[in-house]
Structures are given as structure tokens and as C-alpha cells.
Image 1 (spheres, rainbow, N blue to C red):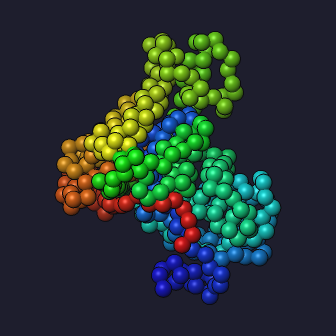
Image 2 (cartoon, rainbow, N blue to C red; image 1 turned 135 degrees about the vertical axis):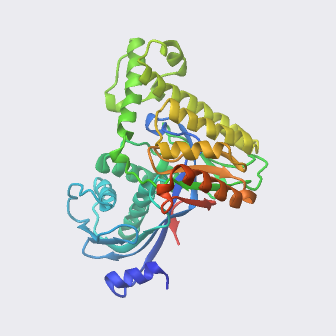
Image 3 (cartoon, rainbow, N blue to C red; image 1 turned 180 degrees about the vertical axis):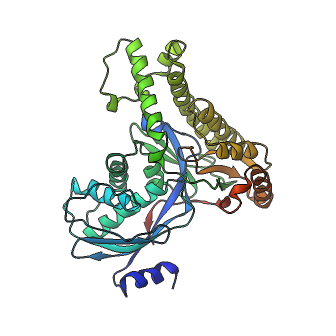
Length: 396
């Protein structure tokens, strides 16, 4: 009996009709910080994430405990969802709130969740949201499609939790396949799952390296939402220069403005907003170039573009804590790392990399030694994991 089953029995006694669900974490190798502007993105899910073990309750009551966070979260899906409480249960409440907009929920959930890595930069929130939407769908027989799971989880994070992100995280968690790159247009929702080598598929020549800085963060307490607003403002400025009719600010995106318009006006824009727009356009170009390299089976070029993405994140998008920047610098000079960048919003959290599996041990030793020389205070919390791309969220 594993620790999830032991915890379930500890909290709730012997249960029946138990369901088990795995919702993976995700990384975005190319397409950083552009999904909220309807840009082009890429992604992998990988074989670490959040496990759910649960059963249905006929009363509508939700009782959820976590092996990663404190507190038993309780509420009732048959009643209006209360305001946020500032704990991990807000994601459960948010998923319920989103579904309540379109469905009458009758059955609740009693269960345990467990995350398999430290939190920070891998979209643990999207994994939790998508998994809980699927759990509520299962016990209430809603019949949701995978696209609907993405939409409800995204609506919950934006409109209930309060993070103004796009659909990248949820799409990776739900749509990815283990041996393919997800390529997604976040404006249209169109996506492709592309084998490495394209029409002549090859085995994946890399594993995913996850480098936790030792510093945790919460996106709603960073400049994430400010950066979103700056991108929208950049779009507004360019549209004003073109004397275009402006949309409401909340409906404005950089994708609405052609790159040629940016090139025309970039020198007269306030520098801060020009930098945000420059990151958007160059990052979307890197995604397109990266897809070509991926289809050609060229991991070196793909990795080089990932490094360039991180440079733009630092210089144009202006994110990255000192710790993450140090890891990035170390990765650039480490043999066996094809490419890497900050993961998630890039304010604290983790860096990710595509690494040569034959050089895992050397990479672990070299990065650890160099990072802890600079930041010895993180010797007990700095961690490195090597993972494989995986399929999206599903029942076990």
C-alpha cells in the first residue's frame, strides 16, 4: 500500500470506489511569457506531477488533504463558492467555481493529493486545477472534452485565483504526449503534436533537467500581472500611433499588432514597453524556428534557441532572480546541456534544460558545485532532477 492509500485511510477510513489520477507538471522550452498575449508556444509534460486518490461524496461535500501542504480543505459543490482564503484550496475552489458557471454539480470529492517535486516554475497550479476539474467531471458525469478541461482550468486561474495567464500551462498538462513536442497557437487554440524528426521520427536524444534554485515563489506575489499589463500597454501604444480604434484594455493583445508595426514605431516607444514587445515578437519567431529544428531532428539548434529565449527573458522581459540567473550562466558553460532557461514566470523557482542523458552525473556534480559556491545558503533546498517527457493528465 503506497503513501497515498495510507493517507486516505488515515484521514477518511476505509473507502470504496476510489479513483486514481495523475496530472503532470510541464515545461515550455520555447514560447516564454507570450501565451497571455496570444502568442506561439511549445511544451512538454513530464513524468513528475500531482497524484490524486479520491472517491465521490453524495452530499456534495469536498474534503481534500495534501501530502505537500497543510490543512484539510472543505467546502460544498452544491453551494456558491466563497471568496479566496489564501491557501492551496483556492485552486480547488476555483475549479469548482468555474464549472458551476455552466453545470449544476451534485457530487463532491473526498481525497488526497501529493506533489512529486518542490513547487516553483513547473505549473503545479495548472496540474492541480486540471486534475481537480477532471475529478469533478468524473464523479458528476459531465462528459467534458480535453479542450473543455483546459478552458475551465484556465478560467479558474484567471477569474478566481487572479493570475492573468494564458492557456499554455493547462494545454501542456492536458494535451501533451510523451514522445512529441506540443506546438500551440494560443490565439486560435490550434495545436500540433510533433515527433522529433518530423516525418522521419527519431528517439528523443535528451532528458529534461530540472534545477530548483532553492527559492520558492507564488506568482500572485510577483510582477507577473504587471508584465501582462505592460505587454497590453505596448500594444495599445502601437495601435494609437497607427490611429487604430482601441479595444478595451482587457481584450488587447500584442498578437493584434503586426511585427512590422513594432519595427516602425519601436524607437519612439517608451523603452520599457518596447522591450516587452521586442520579447514577444522575437520569442514567437524563436518558436517557429524551433519547430523547424525539431522537425529536422536538430537538437543543437533547438537548444541554442532555448538559451536565446532566456537571454530575451532577462533583457527584454526583465524577469529572473539572481539565483535563476546564476543557474542559467552555469548551464551555458556546462558540457552536455543543449539549452536551458527559466521555467514558469522566471521570478524565482526553477530552471529547465535539455540534457544529454549520458552526461547526467557530470551535469549534476558540476552545476551543484558551482551554484552552491555562490549560494551556500541553499545547500539543503537546492535540488536537481532528470525527467522524461510524458503524456497529459489521465486516470491510472
